[in-house]
Length: 256
Ligand SMILES: NC(=O)c1ccc[n+]([C@@H]2O[C@H](COP(=O)([O-])OP(=O)(O)OC[C@H]3O[C@@H](n4cnc5c(N)ncnc54)[C@H](O)[C@@H]3O)[C@@H](O)[C@H]2O)c1
Image 1 (tube, rainbow, N blue to C red):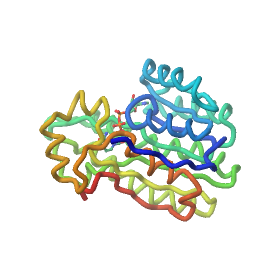
Image 2 (cartoon, protein in one colour):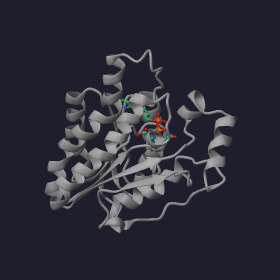
Image 3 (cartoon, helix red, strand yellow):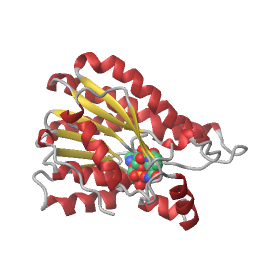
């Protein structure tokens, strides 16, 4: 099933930053914002996929998305890349904190190093990217920050203790930042996707039986694709949601 995304004229020419924009949901977001006429910069370690995406879109959109190769676990490097991106996109009013890695861990085998690594790839960068972007949003008169959490932390998924903790943390962080940044007209919301069939999910974790089991739990009897996340994210980025902040929006086809 194809999912159409609404058109938001206020996103045209808007500076938009997306972490993890090289593949999966992030790539769908980069493309969708670019097709709205936004000036998009995205950050990823997946160089080949990211360069392919930027190249493919270059001839099709008003402003070619700009790719910055950076590991979001390296906060200094990430902040430097954000500063560079701000210089090329102009005033930034949208930040999408999407990069993550949903590694599985056995309870008995998870080390302190694994734990810290999971928080670094799934949670820590969300705060520091926000810290780096807020002055630009203040100067621009406001903005919208969209943090990617997950329904995983609400589902008793025993194989994901570190990832689930990070994703629960994103919901708390979203509330805290929304309170702190509301007076600056900066909105902060979270999206909690359900099972979305990205290339990585299909390659590593999800088979026909898992898809059937999830669809059975959903109200909507079809699986979700990255396109299902695009509409809610564009809505939260645009002024159409001008009074919505501090919220966590579940996009899971009706599991929870
Ligand atoms: N797909 C799902 O079913 C699902 C479900 C719930 C939540 N989510 C969340 O949605 C978001 C997008 O998920 P997805 O399924 O598209 O993931 P994905 O793995 O398909 O894509 C994630 C992107 O982030 C990049 N990335 C990973 N580590 C990085 C790092 N250290 N530095 C820079 N970039 C890095 C990857 O290269 C990749 O391009 C994530 O926050 C994820 O936790 C996804």
